[in-house]
Length: 126
Image (tube, rainbow, N blue to C red; front, top):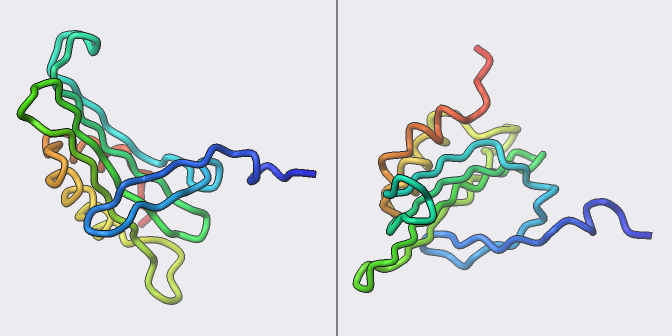
């Protein structure tokens, strides 16, 4: 008998300056995202960009994004970071997570939606 985690879709995520990682969607829920395109409607857009943040129950977090362009001399971009909590911690510090979103956004030319993605993160209890 298969468990739920065995039936979830496998996703390959491109990371910056390291090999891609594969995850099971059901074990890494999406906790924040942002998206933009340059057209009035998406189907007419020449450029599109997105940022996503996924988090495992053990606190590991993946921030990743992409940029797609229909212009011939403008390459599509992908990048991301895997954040691992410090020993004894169950979650990534909010400032470290926000900084990672900004780094990934810069690497995939999506700086204009970094703050939107950060604002979509779960609120910290203080």
